[in-house]
Image 1: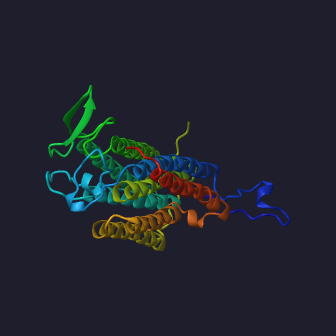
Image 2 (image 1 turned 30 degrees about the vertical axis):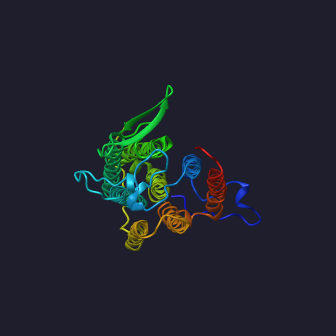
Image 3 (image 1 turned 90 degrees about the vertical axis):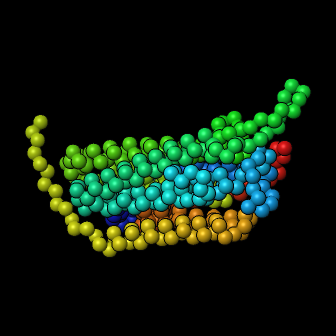
Length: 256
Length: 105
């Protein structure tokens, strides 16, 4: 691995060529810069969420008296309070908390795979990569359930809205959510939910595919023949980044 | 193509390093638990948001510093990654403030 920065001849700078000034291989460096550009994309999404949220009226009043309405921004813990197999039980944020736990744990197994890679320990790399893949798939399954529940609605009868259509006030009920309207709050709320968690979920999905590729390559001995397991490290960087983004999504979408 | 097994020398597990990684994992989970406690014990407002942001920055620091190993990289790489993020922070502050000045209803 290329962690050690090479010694430089007296009177020469690391930027004069011949050594890696950043002490990282080309591939690792490019992964870092890719992740930075990806961080800008996610920042764009989350900052736009902040802009739109602060431009919408917040809910004023006691949290216990909160009701869904398209006229104020919902309190997230009132929206995300369902857990599979426990229909009708109010467990605010418990399921997202579980998803956070799963993703952090899969980040730990990933970093253990990287550690095993440094030692050329193929068996350990395989074991930890497999656990990381399992963690990623579990997270995706949780997200699939969460999306389904969000789209179909909690089954509490929906939210009444009154629109002015063709010169008359018409009252109707919205149940669940799509990109045009949702029962939880202003239309933009569901749009941001779909785009932010969707974009993150797609990153997790790509990460699982990359992790599988790494697992496959270590099983077939590609990295043993290559003489190093640096690919585990590069994909590891990506996987930790996905975990990092979730930390921010968790705070800014579910907690604040 | 001749296929022959490559001789690989496997080093023993670095116990101290692995213990440290698990400790970082414990810290991350502990911070998440603290966030949960805050979520249900404080009223929505600037104080709560501030606490969440601080705890999130701690979590991000541990993930990027320890898991992604950035803390131990060459200083040039460390700052090359960190400095551009200042602009993101500024963008966040500016946009959230601007949002309060937009009337959508």
